[in-house]
Amino acid sequence: MTMGNNLLKGKRGIIFGALDEHSIAWKTAEKAHEEGAKFVLTNAPIALRMGALNKLAEETGSTIIPADATDNAELEKLIAEAVEILGGPLDFILHSIGMSPNVRKGKPYTDLNYDWFHKTLDVSAMSLHRVLQTAYKLDAMAEWGSVISLSFVAAQRAFPGYNDMADAKSLMESITRNFGYQYGNAKKVRVNTISQSPTLTTAGKGVGGFDQFINFAEDISPLGNASAEQCADYTVMMFSDYTRMVTMQNLFHDGGFSFTGISEKVMKKYGM
Ligand SMILES: NC(=O)c1ccc[n+]([C@@H]2O[C@H](COP(=O)([O-])OP(=O)(O)OC[C@H]3O[C@@H](n4cnc5c(N)ncnc54)[C@H](O)[C@@H]3O)[C@@H](O)[C@H]2O)c1
Image (cartoon, helix red, strand yellow):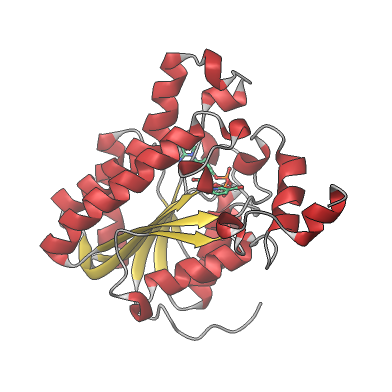
């Protein structure tokens, strides 16, 4: 492990969504710890059953508080307890949560199950609003606090395999703008999304055609795909005091993928 630069020294936070060591949230927790932050780890009760998170909690000296991000009462308890355990208001929150039953069960976009579509939007997008609203009502964030959630470029452009998660990401980016406006005005809290490259995690691998797509994205992007560790680096910078005036943005962290039309590597493969 490399030495940190104390970028988050004295900062307190909550990290949602570390499932196993591949999770973007897991890497971010390690990095935030390295940079001097104190935080509470949380995930849905069902995701905690395997006990993998205990290892990360030990490694980073963190407390685990279970909470389903679609449950207001559990979020209220989590945020109130986190402030108490950490000894003050929160400087950062990482929302790293996504799930679509339609993707999981292979339902195509033209034949969605609407109960599942609701679930996709609730877990993957509305949960961000719930987290923000709960923190807002409890006045749990410190001034200049920073909230990050993770998005994907399917919020702007069509990626058929991404299914109803594309709509969830669009909604999440919209909530980021609208709550970012409110929270900025009220308390100088900034709210942003990081739009990350395809990454080998449990959620990533669930998307149709992922194995081929990740190679395609690597071949298109001038810098190649951004790894989970690199995403953690960027997130830590967004939690730091060096990015205080950035809010309501969707920040592409994808090696240039989103702004590249075609690459020479791909042209060669097609004999162009
Ligand atoms: N992996 C990729 O290719 C990729 C690319 C861009 C964005 N993202 C986004 O990054 C975020 C993190 O995903 P990941 O790739 O690290 O995968 P992951 O599977 O490790 O993380 C997803 C997390 O969401 C949690 N979760 C699901 N339902 C929940 C609920 N009801 N309450 C609380 N937590 C719940 C899971 O337990 C899990 O920890 C997601 O928002 C995902 O859409 C991933």
